Amino acid sequence: MRFAIIPGDGIGKEVTAEAVKVLAAVERTFGRRFEYEHLPWSADHFLQTGVTIPSNGYDHLRTFDAIFIGALGDPRVPDNRHARDILLGTRFELDLYVNYRPIKLLDERLCPLKGRTPHDVNFTVFRENTEGLYVSIGGRFKAGTDDEIAIQEELNTYKGVHRIVRYAFEFAKTHGLTKVCMADKSNAMTDGHALWQRVFRQLATEYSGIDATHYYIDALAMYMVLDPGQFQVIVTNNLFGDIITDLGATFQGGLGMAASGNIHPGKTSMFEPVHGSAPKFAGKNIANPIGAISSAALMLETLGLHPEAAAIEAAVLKAVRERQVTHDAGGTLGTREAGDFIAAAVTR
Ligand SMILES: NC(=O)c1ccc[n+]([C@@H]2O[C@H](COP(=O)([O-])OP(=O)(O)OC[C@H]3O[C@@H](n4cnc5c(N)ncnc54)[C@H](O)[C@@H]3O)[C@@H](O)[C@H]2O)c1
Image (cartoon, rainbow, N blue to C red):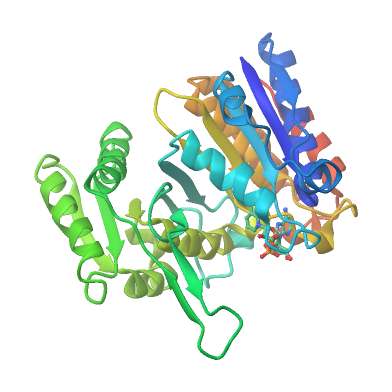
């Protein structure tokens, strides 16, 4: 297996080092050989060279079995153009239409919701990852004046909606799950989200064993807090998925705990923690590496290395239960020490 590693900015660099440390433990434990190519694409690299991603960058990424990204974002690049090219660019250019975000509580103590246990918080959000409001269609007229007009369009295509909704139903079916909930705002966004309604209803008829339900996104946010146990699979658009998975991350113990995959089935996919570069935390050895390490587990799982992925998940669970974790997760360890514990806990 060959992996492209893009540590990126801020704490991205620190948590990526821990994820690679744990992958190395998997190599030793399972007698596997992974190759890593570290790519320097980041704010530092952009500020030094003026290049966000080289002209053959996306083609180069396609040559790997998977891509791992730490985080991108740096106050020295106020428009975050490097992040747009490296992160959003990779999602769009490699057509990584599935944003896969498990919301799984590992330990009751980490959940801010009263009385909720791991049994109540265990669902998966599939966020459409290549369309919606993030396609940069729009512009500003008379920018900077009192007459400014700002327009940003939301793109919804039949193909785009159909493939993410299909993926959510297929995931439920292959994982023995019985519920898929679609969330939109079709009461107010009566054109774009009518398409989501039509596709969801159409596909639901093909999955008779699955209870297909719908919530408007505002109600969904409320029910996630009030009764998270009712959800198994949620499918939604790019913007709403972005927002509700940060909410979901808090159920898991915070942004430092949450993992994600950006997937195009059968093609090179990209894995990253949900959090950003947290510039205030950078260089202090305090960032929680679990989101990154769990993203490495998702990467191996997606590549079919199931025992290896399970070994990482078990090691993370042990760290959380024994409080061998960073402060945000109730421990006293630094980023590197938390990574050391998890790497040492990886066993067959
Ligand atoms: N996928 C990405 O690369 C990504 C995602 C979100 C934000 N960003 C970028 O990151 C920069 C900072 O954004 P932000 O502050 O809104 O979000 P952020 O996720 O970087 O941090 C928000 C807060 O969450 C907590 N947090 C995040 N990661 C943590 C970790 N590993 N361990 C412990 N606590 C953690 C911290 O309290 C932090 O202040 C911005 O430039 C933003 O554009 C990048």
